[in-house]
Length: 472
Image (cartoon, rainbow, N blue to C red; front, side, top):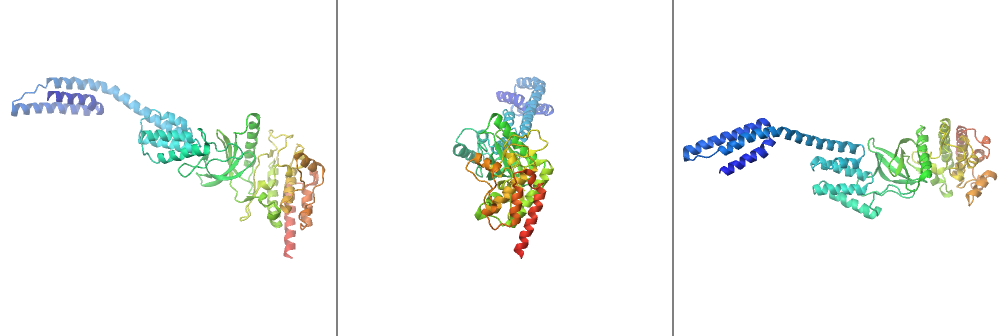
């Protein structure tokens, strides 16, 4: 019995007192001592048995004093350790909010598993999924599963990520959103979070261009649909990458300086490790290139009205000292249901007060480029007037003024030959529309419309005349 009491005393001193406050520890020890005295008296009174409790008192008294002196630094160390773990958790949460998932995991490395830390690890894995770091997300989910089996839907997410790693990417590295201008990101199934660019969630691919893929996205903060144009770094390097990045950001700068209902609005621009992106207004509809074949041409009054609004928008841009330089049917979005028109793709726009844009460089779509642009000369708004004239030619006839098998031959024709008559391809075109086209595509810029605004007025007059003839 004495041995058992001694064991209880040792357990009280070593385990009970560190877990209690000082006052409570003294009270419990005193109650134990008083209980021993009462028990001693009862045993002596009823059973005439004397228990040698001296060793127990010798243990409890000095042991309590020693433990009380030891408890102060012990508690300080314990509280400090808890504060450190709490600080590491808070740091991990803060780093995750800043998008630094890897650093957040490092901050949690020494934290024992708890509901809090497991939830944070889960949130980190979700962010890694959205950033397309699928292998990293799988490792994080595996850590969670090792610490607590059956935690949330970790098992299902691991299985979905394994399908992506083995079936979609075929590599042991994170799947990139774009590898080149013709590739698209892997859109995972419902078990995996939608990928994101910046704060935008990606829904699906909606188009492709020379520099990258365009996606339909969602801004979750304000529930707004956006078109996200990407520029992948994977296929470029060195000076070429630097120049193309400059061109890409110049598109955002040029469009961002413009505020017109017929010009696409730029909301945001950003960069990730493997690509840059521009989030812009999502324009419903199709590019006018969808209506540029002879069997799919729009009604002429519609064409004249649409291009008049485009000319108005170009006139506004020119007054803001921005020349588009790549006007063509593919860069004009038209919604047949609402009638809305949007000019897109300011990727090679010339900003008059931007020293980075110099003469001597030839970029654009050769079929629609003005002669002065092909020569690499300094250009003005009349260059866009020429391109818009060629666009009208195309939408009215399904053909272009010049046609050749090679770029060299095409360039020679544009610079030296007379354009083919649009009447060859559409003999029913009114004389007024033919004169308008011929004036817009004059080789000499001074002989074209003086401004895009003047061309807009001519287009509207032609539309009115066409409407009047049809009415009569």
